[in-house]
Image (tube, rainbow, N blue to C red; front, side, top):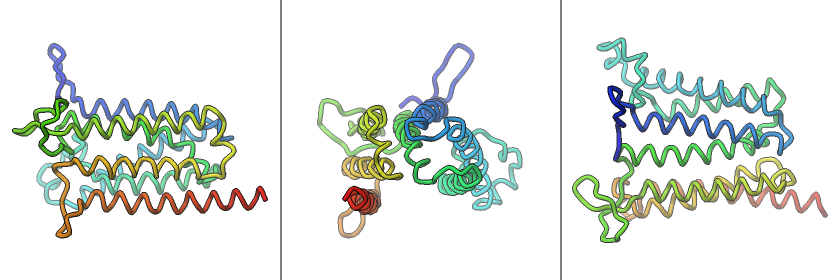
Length: 250
């Protein structure tokens, strides 16, 4: 856990820096992926920039709507850089809405845009996993394995690092498909759904080692249930696009 990095008189917030680096690197890779899929790098870059910006604003607005009393007591916190004052769901919904609007205005096919954004999403997963490690979030169950880490009074599975390693592997696989030109030959959206399926499968695996995940009465970890549902959706879409591709080739 490393929430703050002291550098002389400065104290840098490590979780925030990791998130910023992830957004920057992911955006750069998405711009490089765009031409491989027949899209203009500038279109993808602009859509990403304005969507992320809108997402941050939307996350703060949703948080204000959820907890108006807290912001009324401290009006200056509206402009705070504290990520704890952001609503993740509200931010994602706002970013997706703005991305869809911009894509329509610029004539960018939504499914192909999703393919081009796969490197961005993959890098963002790595950044979020490392951010959780820096904050001590998403911690694992106690373990006697030699690679366990001391956290919150016990030696635990480093689930954040498991997640980061899997996300890096998914990034490597999907980037290989892009670099070799395979993804460009697939139906629009197939690369995205393959990425979602791989990521969800790994998420379900890692969730089994989580020590902070709620458990249902039936013994299922709720994070695993969510991951299985997302995996099922991704596999259905993957299968649908594969059948459509086969039908066109016949």
